[in-house]
Image (cartoon, rainbow, N blue to C red; front, side):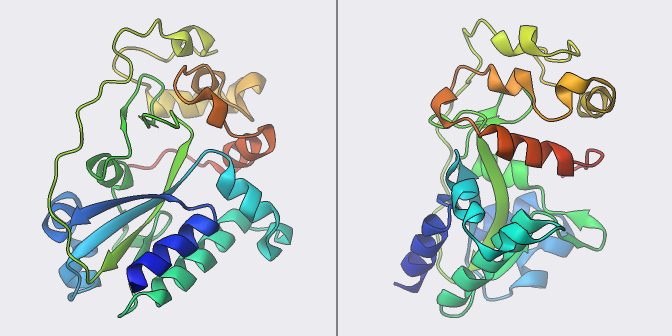
Length: 230
């Protein structure tokens, strides 16, 4: 029951995207500093937590953190995660997307893919079957509940697509194998049309109705730093 309350709290706050992993699956994907034996020895399961569509931004916009000058969305998300983790019995351990242990990040894309968030697309991010590229991966909760291992349903989001994302990319970087992240970062520094939005991402035909607002897109674009290996 406590886990259900935590998930409901997350959903109410705009973090309604969640996928479960058996603890062995989690441990097989993360580097040593992030293994459950190091972080939460009693954990038997892991929940990958994220946001989909515009709901997180709408909840955040009404929060006190909105007025902060430094990392307001992260501050809001950390508060929500901490409050939700405390509802679990015992409290869940949170691995936040921006945190490092011994200098390494959680491989959240790999964890989210295994948890069923979607499959890689040409545009360089995971494509969710419903929300398309309009999802974010925020954290992992290590919990005492156990989950059965399962294989995500096979899905190839770009098969048969005319790839409007490729023609929309101002740097011509979108190809069948995805996007060169380093080259994309350099382009965003030099092309004004790429500074506050990604037209390639917006051109994806999956989940268009869930696209972030211009304000949310600009926020994420402004806070991006050099690409990290996660």
